[in-house]
Image (cartoon, rainbow, N blue to C red):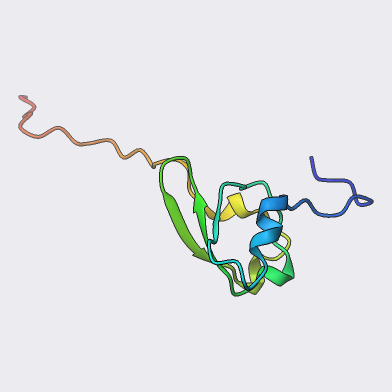
Length: 88
């Protein structure tokens, strides 16, 4: 379900402070925040649950949530068993 049209896009207060060019520490835990046009060109370190991942905000990302660009789960690739020979 999307956010109502009469409400403005959500951005966390701590992330809003980091849009200021004087702010040096560009780390965020807020993946639910919407990317504003003022954030284009910023390099943010975003927490994915284990590590901080560095992402540069591009113009195509405006209007989307920050969490859409961060993988939080590993892809499961089943291992093939070696040494098993089928006899006929």
